[in-house]
Length: 132
Image (cartoon, rainbow, N blue to C red):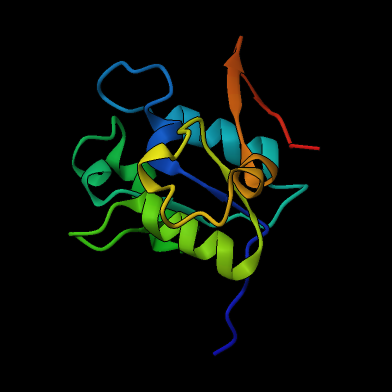
């Protein structure tokens, strides 16, 4: 089987929890995919616990069943999988997480600055900022 390599990996748990209000929102994931799908090959990675607290499980399952979102294994944080994949496939990481807990995995601060894509959601519009 051929592995399809994404060129951007969204941190799905970070996106769903964008506003820090519980529960995490599927609408933020939808906004992100709609904003990026015409420009990037996307495979999102989520923490397994998101499955149990997302506000619309039925819609979330749609992404999971199609392999658009993958869940991290039960004992591994999604951030670790995201960083490993970004290193292996040289792709961008879409997250507002500064990933400081995982600096031991990251080759350098300059690598992180050139690969981390922060985002905002303003008036229902998903905005992302590709590093230069």
